[in-house]
Image (cartoon, rainbow, N blue to C red; front, top):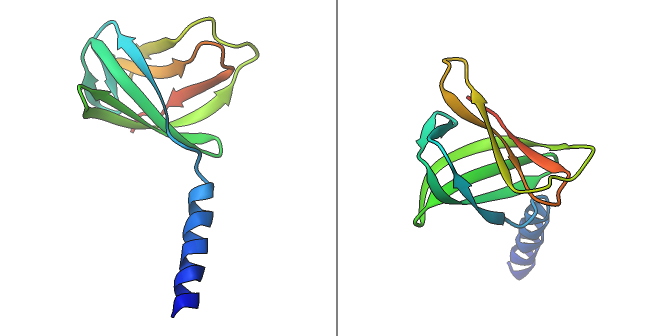
Length: 115
């Protein structure tokens, strides 16, 4: 029985190794926008994400409460971003939607998917 428990622990640890630790940054949303169909009002948010291969799960929290979550692809750009930036555009209905998260000094960009 001890051997089985030890084996299960090894497999659990191996599964955790596939995803990197959660990363986070505080970002200011300047205008109301949407993330995966959820309204994200203007204000400061803790944006957290966990990377796995070339994808990430992104969470927006305000005052400790999750207000929106989205799946993202991680794409590499030719040059690092000069500053932290939230890039918005229009979704299929014409409403404002968050498209990308760029981080100062990083070539990697989180490109949000819209379900």
